[in-house]
Image (cartoon, rainbow, N blue to C red; front, side, top):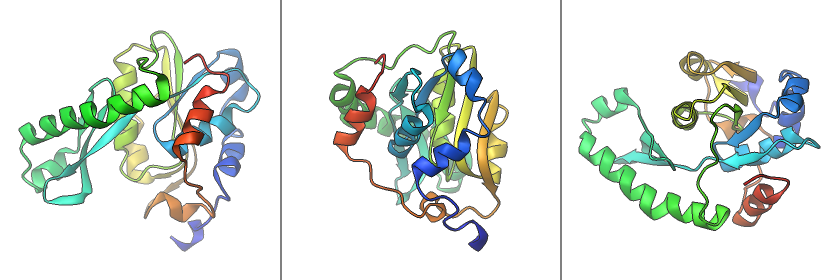
Length: 220
């Protein structure tokens, strides 16, 4: 674990290093659409795009926590109401599926819809049909954000879906590989702890910055 501590300076450094493993000429020529799956992923996508005209969007999703443990994410729902469930945790906590679907509906109505109106003025998530999509995040503890994004985007029948993530647990990488056309990463880590450990600085992304990043050279 210690050898990976602070291996990246910040999101800009991570994006710069990712451009060495992402085929940037294809990224530019084929006009890949960047889809951030978190606030930090949005800033990372901004640095990845650099001077190119590729569009950036944010796929909003919300965690569903175990009823008896508010720090344990057992499922996630996307803005298109796709749900991904961690079956092992649901079984371990003996959680009823009615609870998950009820929480998914509540989170969608109370939180996700408010994000859509605040950041996209009520517009729906852009269609990814026949597009080449690059899902982006700064890291991934469980893979649930990426799995939810994959389920949502794949349902729209894109040409291809790639993932860009600087640091990723080895087991999550193995989980995601069958669903993505390729995964671009810098470090896959066996004993992954939490994403912030691997950066010297992870600046908090506030609401004003989200609006700014989504407003720059976008088709949204």
